[in-house]
Length: 322
Image (cartoon, rainbow, N blue to C red; front, side):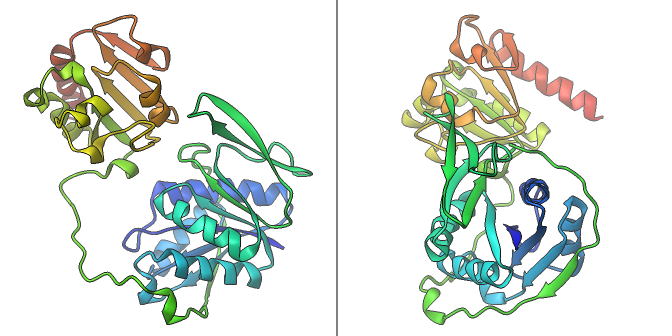
C-alpha cells in the first residue's frame, strides 16, 4: 500500500505548489503508516526530480514521455490510474490547480474512488476518513467523509505550506500503456507570455477596484506590481466596465486565487470578491472608507487615497530592495 502525489511540472521545472503537495502528502503517508510515491509526467531532469526528496518523496516514478509534455487530461488520468494500481495506492493527491481540477474527476471514475476537492488540511479522522474544506463560497468549513476504499484528494493552494523532510528518493522510470486515441487534441503552436506574471500562479497579487476612479489611473497599480514581481488583478465592476480584461477578474464569478500576499487597492470588499481571495495568506487593504467590508477580512488595513498610498508603497519597496 502507498500514497501517490502527482507533482505537475512547468516546462520541466517544479513550483512551490508541487513542493507543498509533496509536503502535505508525506505527512498524510506518515499518518497512514505507509510510504509516499511521487509521480512526475513529462520530460524532467534527474536533478529536478531529486528536489522532491527535500520534502519527503520516498520514491519518484518518472514518466519521461515527450508526447505527455503537454497536459492532456484523459491521458494523464490513465497514467495516474495505472501507477496507482502498480503501487497498490489507496490515496491519490493532486494540487487544486487547473490541471488537478481537470484530471482528478477522471482519475476518480477510473479508480472508482471518492473525490473531495480543495481540501484545507490533513484528515480530521482516518477511520472514518474525514477531510475539511471550505464551503458556501469560503464563508464556512465543511467536513466530508469518504467511504470508498480508494480516495482522491486535491489540496488547496497555501493550505499546508512547505515542510522540509530530506530523504534520498529512489527514481524509477516507468512506461505506461497509453493509447493514441487519448490524444484527440493536438497542440499546434504555443505562445508563452513572458512579460507578465500569470495570475493563477502568482505568489503576490496587486488588485484594484473602482476606487482607482478611471482606467487611466492604473499606472500606480502596475508600478507596484512590477516592483514586487506580482500579478495584477481587479474586481468585477472594473472588468465589467472594460477598464481591465476579464482574465484579471478575481472573485466568486472570476478566478479564485490563494497568493501569499494580496493587496486590495480601492476595493470595497463585496462578498463575491472576498470569496475569490479568502485563501490568501496575507491581505492588505487600502480604502478611503474605514467602514469598507474589505477591512473585516484584511490582515493589514490602510485608510487613505490609493492614488497617494500606492506610490508611497512602491517607493518604500524599491528602497528596501536597494
